[in-house]
Length: 150
Image (cartoon, rainbow, N blue to C red; front, side, top):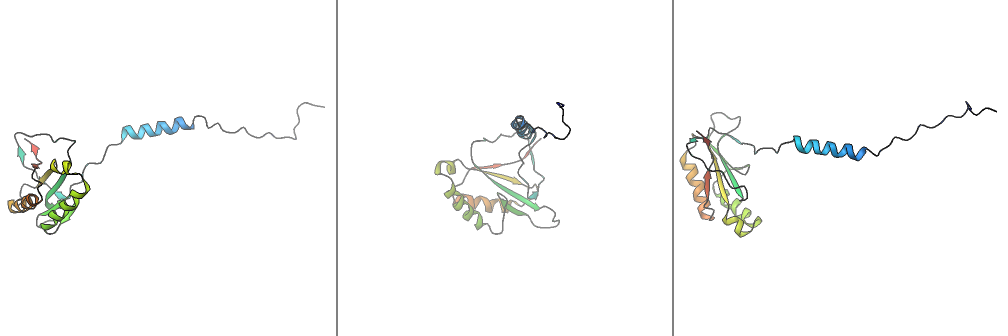
């Protein structure tokens, strides 16, 4: 009688999963640290005017972005207006957009609303005036222009 038998095969021991949560959290922290939030995509080609003095926007206030310029990839086209990424065909659509936007936020936030204009250097001022008239109708009067610092 021998103690060691050749006929029985042992099962392999189970793989320990005790370190699996550590690995998952290390991967989670890695991706949280290395990723950056995506910047707002420009819908138009902009050559922003330069200024001598600029003011940084308050991050807590709600903003509505207006991009005015030539559409990307379309040469010899007319200037277009995008409001928060949506193409505006007619300037009255801006008033309609603001009416809908006003219902989604409370009145105090709407009073603090900042309309940020990113305008191409060669955009006609008549387009900007029409946009400002539509904003005036909806009592969204705070306007700031985005530019590059000289």
